[in-house]
Length: 562
Image (cartoon, rainbow, N blue to C red; front, side):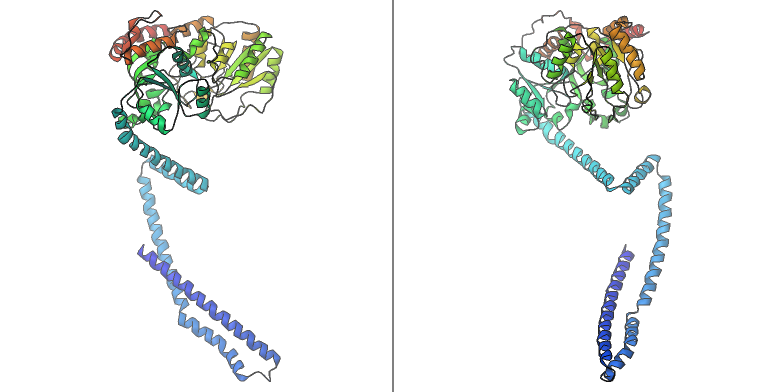
């Protein structure tokens, strides 16, 4: 570093000298021009001094160059640079040797970093953003564990029950459970919906429900005082909510009964050490966990950390067994549902297509919508496409007579109640549709890429999907024709088997069962009265009791699978 500084100083001195030389040359040019003008006016008039000056000019310039000693300085600079280049080569060789000694992962990281730097400044910005995110997350963790959690234990609790969904939307299990809880005459308990979306907040306020908007200073204090939290996923832990609600009792309902790996069963989380697992959202402890059957306990029980277990149905499926109220319509696509009711009255059959989300979901190229629309016109079918909320492709630009897009952010369950045939791929929505006992067609056109590549499945896909599998559009149209037009149903017995395996209860009392267990476990001041439905005490079990009966359940389920 010292030699480099010297080299830079020398280079600065060379630049200064060169500026002086340029200044002298400019002056000499001006003198030369003046003298030449006088000479042109007449040699007779021109003084002898001017001629002497002209003759002495090149000699003077030579003397200046000699005094400056530019040639020697340039030679020295060149020698120094050559030495530096040779030394840098040696350093590079040493660095290459050290890189070869490094493990493969570090080499890959270095190569990726070099590529990122070479490609464009946008990539460099992304790198800086990632670094900033990392610092931001770590500071939030320190703030949460060191300040917010101790405060949450000091603040006294009131009798408030807070429900918050994965992404702040008013849909799914928590929507129907919240509507049910508000229909009860529980005077001492306050039921609140926590959301991060303003449009959800305003709609629920208009309906007269208790809603908290997050983040705000008032909600921070209210969250400290909550006694019970009900959630349907692990995403609620983001944006410091986990720390504000740390001391509250937690109930996990989950948002589906699917085939995919979830929670602690994910391969990415299994690889982590115990310390790194604790920092993950999937490591959250739930005081009550609700699953739909003994089979689900066997398959998904190890995905959660929990205290007591409740075998119960899903609150969102209660609407299949009751009439839709005005509050049930919150968060759903009103206009389209009214149109579908009119189409059904005219004799058209409704087919719903609900594909699951994929990482690269910018296009909708796997189906030719124009030919599918003509097929639907011929056979009096109205095809409704309901994309996942994370899908990036737009179908609004297509205007088809018999293909409609359902709002991707809206509640899908009012649509399922009107659907005659469901088409899906890997989504758990088909399991809820089993309760209606209507035909299902599976369209896993990218099963080779998706299963094992993008997402791992807990169960065998072919054994747990009671319906025909189609891998292209021709096969799909043939199956739609068979099941909708000809009304041939070959998979009814398989659907019943799968329904009994995944759901213990096929009634509309899931919300009622859940609330009665919450009251008996977390609200001691209530009278422990018997619920209106016929329940057994074995349905609610501690973690130790569940461990004892698990072995028996596994043996029974293995026989059923065989």
